[in-house]
Length: 350
Image 1 (cartoon, rainbow, N blue to C red):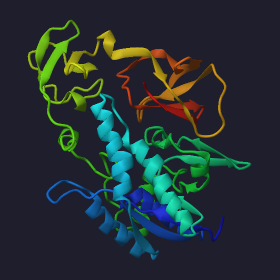
Image 2: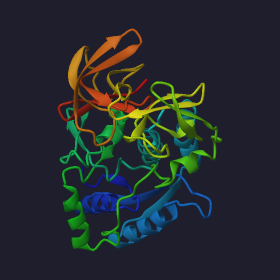
Image 3: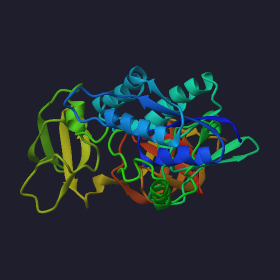
């Protein structure tokens, strides 16, 4: 692996900066690449302009070449349109997973290979383990920071061309390395929000493409509790923006009736908010295809503790039956399936 040409996705964050440093210490031929995927209009909160300046400082500090890659058109088509269309259909899309599968490890990776690089590297917290040219995606050492869930759409080819240099380190160790070597972004906070768009008000962001549509908020018995303006923007289990006063308990979205523009709200104890089963029309396998029925573990959201389940093949695709009822299963979100700490498959929840 020594002297291989590696294009590191330098995001402006400390994780990718330390990744670039560690690769250079291991005598890789390291180049930094910054992806310009989204630039908000002036006056709108957007991290890209600040990120690119920080990334330049890091590359200069590490004495590695720095290039930018403009993927705004691809990001609009592959990620933003996917997100808009998902919300219009009443489901809850996951733009971060789509961004990894379609932009970072597809468009960026493909161009890197065309330019003569051997692999790409990122600051993701996950571990790729190779055994006889077969690549497995393992969880990171800290389950609360593990990012394997966001990598659930990757393929064998993508895993074979990817490096996660900090996958063996605790987050505190990464920060300590950054401070010890004096990286200019050692104290910078981790990014939040939609991948490459930043921490925005999702309601305002979606209003660019989806107009307001006032409708009723009802309880599980059909009694009208109030009004909503944006049925498309809500997800199952959400409490924010309901703005329904006079309730003895906090209320949450338990169902969305897109056709009739109605939100159904209930308390945390309502059975409508929990379910032991879900279905997926298809499963994406990161490597070998498993035989079913199969007992394994699953996550239906980032940072969720592993949930024991049984996966079966049915006429409409796959059915997942959990040992314990799951709160707020949202159509459009991703379920990641684990064999021990190996992420072996994922699917879009119907």
